Length: 196
Image (cartoon, rainbow, N blue to C red; front, side):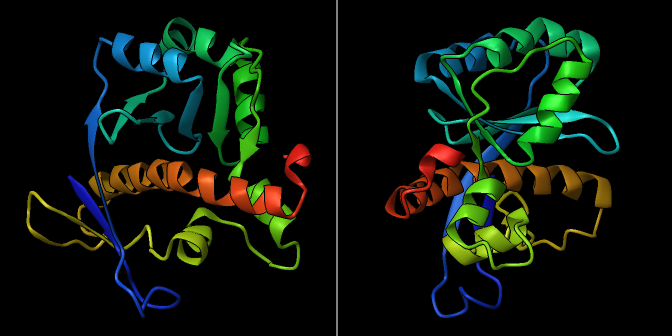
């Protein structure tokens, strides 16, 4: 289990904590695929650097599910989800995801909510729209500052670097899930939702 907790800056006045668990998807993808089809939305983060991996948010269990992405897994397990126009895809850098999927013979549909684009439409004067800054600004927490309840202490992301990178990506997809509702409300209030 991961606790995302406040660091310094905007959230220094009030401590905010979010909890979620994470688990690697091994062979059985049916549960998460069925859930995404039922809910008609998919919160995800594709890591296109290093080893390619996908991180999905399991809304019913407040859990992040992740797996390495091979061409076979991508086509066998995720092609139908990405090509289903009835499922809203929420993520970050959707243009890069779309390009990656297209290169793998997947024509993604309904890639409709990119948190970076939404944040830009809300405030186009900012210089950066990365997930760390958006989480700090809109959710009052720092995705790079979290603790792992199993060890019952605060963890530095640069200790045991490989494991922490996976945990950071888990924190990213959880932030995408939380940011979606906040940014969607703000874009509607600013009457710019059609552009996302």
